[in-house]
Image (cartoon, rainbow, N blue to C red; front, side):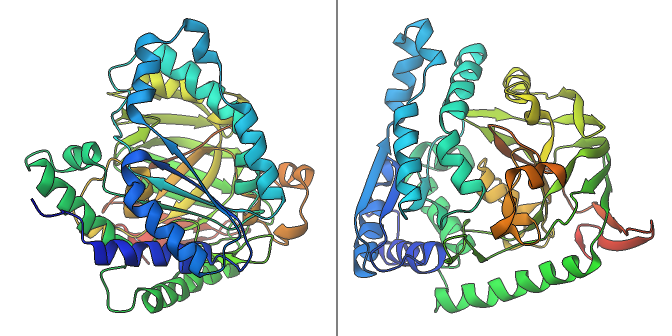
Length: 411
């Protein structure tokens, strides 16, 4: 049977990851993480990295079968352990100039049938151990990028009525389209797309709103924005001076909410895939910036465990605007993968904020981020709240309302 994944387009995706996503510089090391089944893509990325002059490319593979073996046979104490030594080493590599690339391909439902209490403990241990790596990413110290590969289990979840071969083929084409590698000149297409996102960010920065008010089915939410916040989207300059596209695909412009100034209630518009568990139909109520009530029709225990990881987990670290007409939304495909589904809808994120989203971000201290209202946490978890009925008003510093979105589109 023929390969369901176009090798020409896969090669273009690898090229875009290096030349657009990372803009890897000559002599720069690269640390890549990927599931085993994404090895065909990691090999192509490695080739393009070395062609671009990479110093050393190091790939760390993970295996879903090994993950499941832990939950089946692991001693109870193992669920409070994580590889802190590994994350410390990666953090040191970032401090020495390495770039980071992650490939997503895993089954979003991998841990759906495992003990939620053990899943929660393992996630908490992992989140804590990963702090040295995550801190350098969310503070944008380095150029980094996430892309996706059509894993078989993921493909069958997205296209359950197709054979595995056809499901992989369909998911591959959806990934290629969303990543703009099915176009004649993907790099030129990304340049144009980045310009469009920069224009939206520039307009929002010029408005300097004090808050955004979201309204729609099950949602009446006022999100205060951090002091001296700054909107970003598409390509951004990391503190190491390299302009990169952290997420491929991306359709969002985003900024930092004020951790203490979120009020009201909100309902998710798409399922959230979190660490191998699907969380669906989330409803949450905020008071003084904090989630005080939360429920979900599926995966509620995992949701609550996630929100209880630390004090900052119940507060927002990001708010992002995505029109309902975005290509990923218009594809009509539910990816069960936050990388894609967040680019089909406006979304918020629990947990750690991006220090990049502040004026003069290269020189801002952790203390100033906190003083401006930026949140701190061991997690950063996006969930989708926008749809075709979403209205958003910007609230000016003087209290005036300015239409930002109407019925899911830029106003």
